[in-house]
Image (cartoon, rainbow, N blue to C red; front, side):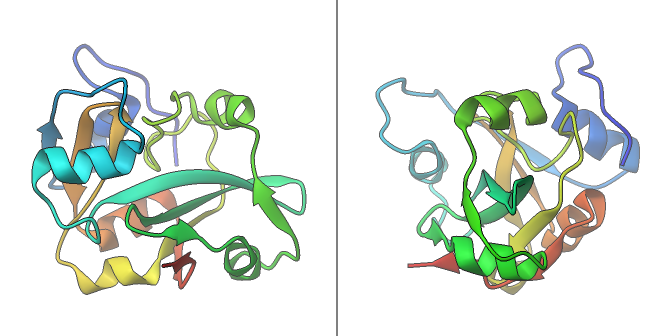
Length: 164
C-alpha cells in the first residue's frame, strides 16, 4: 500500500480511504484527556457497542513490528498474534517505536495510512459485523467501514487474536 500524506483537514487514514474509493463514515467526539481507555471512551462517546469498536495495537513478533486490531472490550492475545503471522514470540512494542513506525500518536494509531506498512491481523470477530469502527488517525476521531475493506486496504489477515 502506498504511503498516504495528510491532506488539508484529513489524516493519512482518511486520505487512504478516499484514494481507494472506499465508503466510510467519520465520527468525531470530544476527547477527554483524563479517559482511562481511548477505545472505551470512543465506544461510550459514540454510543456504539464496544464489540464493534476496535483498537489498533502495535506489537513485536520475533523482533518485527506487527499490528493487531481487536475489540476495545477485550485484549490482544500476543501468542495468537504471533501464530497468525507465523511467529513464535510476541510482546507489546515500545510506545515510541509504535508512534515512529505508524506516524500516529498513541490513542490515535489507525491501521490505515501508517507511515510504514506492517503485517496486520484483524480479530475474526470483526467479520460478524457489517461495519466496524477504528481510529481515523487522531484521538477523538473514528472511521466506520466494512471489515472486508479494512482487510483489503491493510493487506491484513483475519484470525482469533482477541480475548476477554
